[in-house]
Length: 204
Image 1 (cartoon, rainbow, N blue to C red):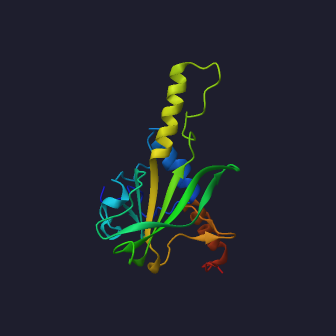
Image 2: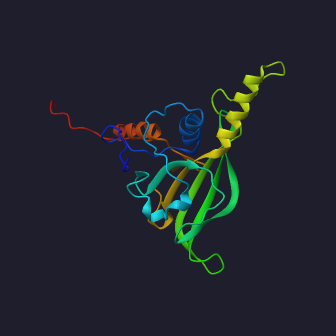
Image 3: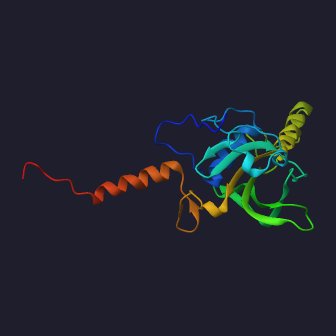
């Protein structure tokens, strides 16, 4: 995909955590098309160093997005990804729909590595939260139960990753209590600026 967005000119891809989980990861897990279908699927992150993602993952500003299978081995050829802090719940409609893990990249060996500014947010869907993946009733057929188990397996195996160099600053806007603004939010807020512009009246 080479980082192309296939978005109209002037539009930028800066989704919120909720949008990444609900509109992209959940549809990926449910084997449904994403609209727009712009986030590529890559091998697990240990296959690449973070600075090698350019041209492979979707680039939006100083951030790179991609789907991959969840992996236990987070070591690359130059270092490894190390989880920091606690997992954050991603909520939608008043309920938790996913988790966001934060990892930082260190260069060298685990015993004497150097922590870099490369950061990864790894988004996980809660088990069984894919579309059509709700648990079957007690009297459900065995095939329905098998589909339910398959959905749970899929939801735990796929992740969506956002990688960025924190030293470059984030290009995602924040408002209020740390809530991320979506692309549409920014459009509507920008329209408010027109109220502050006084255009000359040539007929005065």
